[in-house]
Image (spheres, one colour):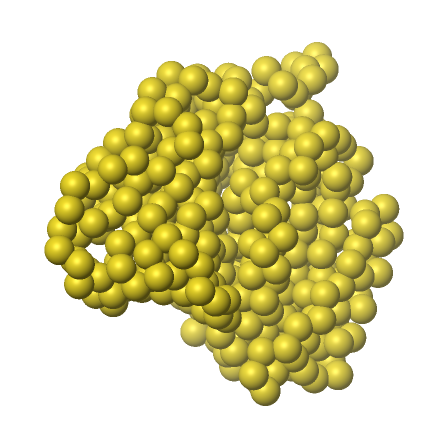
Length: 400
């Protein structure tokens, strides 16, 4: 979680954007968000009818997305996945940045069986398409990937496989902004609010979104929730990445039914969500982070005996027999004062110099959370992971 005074952060961000007259580049991007095109995107997705993962209609939606992204001039790949009895494809379109640190915008293109999926999640996919079309004409400091997942309705299967691949390839992920079911309004209040679900480490993403919503007078306020693990953002959080889940404020009773059609999608509201996603993404993609922290030990999907790796497993957590040996990697251009290490929210110890390591010696069983907070000169960052631990060794002196 990047902690800083928002005004200072926004000033730093926008100092990297070229100012032309009275309009900066993001203002010009927002003027290009087109309600008619958003309507066309949602209508096209709905026209495929129900398109659950593995169906021919879902494959046709995939081809539609590939063609759209390629028409915008983006590099497009598809990655086939299998997970139990299901299989499908993820679609990835990329704007290469000046560095390989990557911001991901995600949505899912499969629909619930029997549903044409106009809101769930044609609305989120339309935001991705619109943002990609506009941002393709610009350059950014960091790489941006627009990722359309399948398998979401069966339990985030496509995103689980994709994020595991990113993790094993040691891909540098700044954040994921997941956009899912963002087009329905049932009240005046709902037309002004957008729900955002986040864990502690990802709260900074919401801070950025709030600042750009106010700066650009987008007409949306964010209604903050604690995290809810029922979206593709959770696959990123499971592997220690930072992610948020954007969802409409008013519940759409037509979701997961044949009535999830464009008649129940408010295009003006959808356009505001799209603008917020676009402005937030463009801001983060040019952010110069002073501190970023991530756990590099223990690794996800491994079994350890103490600090020794025994074998690889398919789970999104490590299993540790004995004491937990942890190490945090710090990236950024700010000086580090200290790294704080926590176990289930309780401060356990500190590290003051690299390598930033800490051995947790308390007795523990089953699922727990380890967290590290890197404190820099001007900001701080949190990283956290869930671990399965079985330690009956007596407590000893922790050490870094």
